[in-house]
Length: 168
Ligand code: SME
Image 1 (cartoon, rainbow, N blue to C red):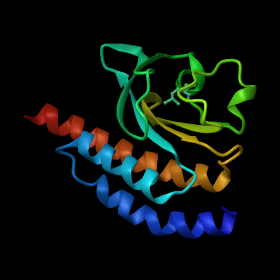
Image 2 (cartoon, protein in one colour):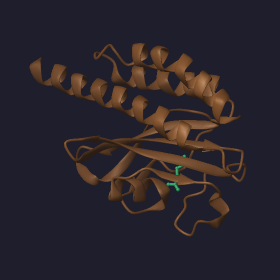
Image 3 (cartoon, rainbow, N blue to C red):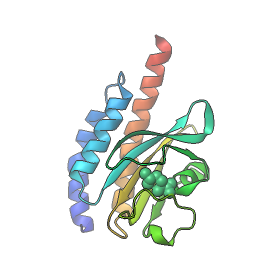
Image 4 (spheres, protein in one colour):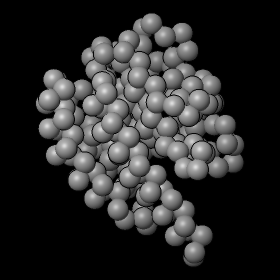
């Protein structure tokens, strides 16, 4: 996809995605809806999933809702693989060619590139959005900016859900 095509597609999806994250009573359903929309509508997104920080072990990520093939990586320690490194360094990782990475956890040989964005609140990692592509070098600045907005919407949803739980 060209950058122009991405721009058009992403701006048409952002409203649908923020609407999907608006309700706070069922965060799993909201996150699942985000995965389904992203995987279903963006041709170069072949696996889309969330990892959430384990509330009982703040240096561990647990697989949350996802769309795509099942993965053996259901728990990832901070520092381990691309997901663990993104969580440890609180920074977005774009990997154009996963075959060139040393610290990488392979899910499937068909995966060629990956983007991982931490979902942050007050400097804490609440979780991450992880997307794999079967195309080398699939992710660009357009993806990063779009997915950052998606992560903001998801963070708001997770926070609202936490607050609603506490208020009960
Ligand atoms: N490739 C990731 C592991 C998660 S799977 O892509 C679903 C990593 O290296 O952290």
